[in-house]
Image (tube, rainbow, N blue to C red; front, side, top):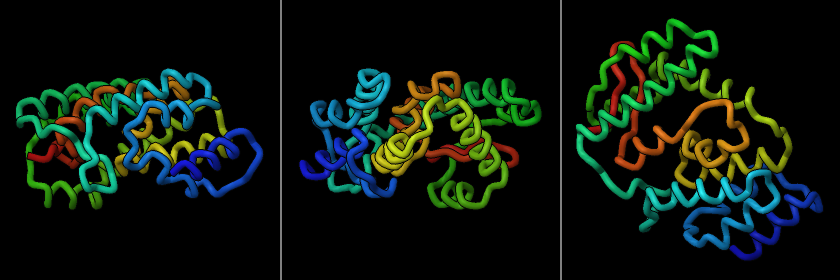
Length: 206
């Protein structure tokens, strides 16, 4: 890991070139704040990025897993409350970005607990879920103030902490402060709240 951190520092300083995926495992299994300091040192808002990375790490656990897992399962009511807060933020974003129909859906759709099998099927096949994801991605990318190879590589690093794009964007939110507040998503995730939007519900794993 020390060698990879050294390579990362060289890459961020512009003294080497690598494919964006090369550093994808940089933070897997990491718990030390000192490592996070090195990882974010060359980016704007480094202190805020480090603090947010600690937020995510403290919300999860590594155990024997390759990717960070939620530390607490919570209960159905807590997950439903957290899901509603996340839906409210997504509705705000949809309304601000010319998606009134999507906004109306997000404000009115019920939160429904479901099995992990149904949820996984919905996450891979649901058109509303895919459309919502595309909107989120576009909003974040349009709000980004930096477009460099280092930022692209950082996205890979942060995605691979928990194999979760939105958690990665929670950490990197200071680089796109006018986009989406991913704090409600982190609150849902930390309770074990995997989710997906379908035609008539917002599914949350029971």
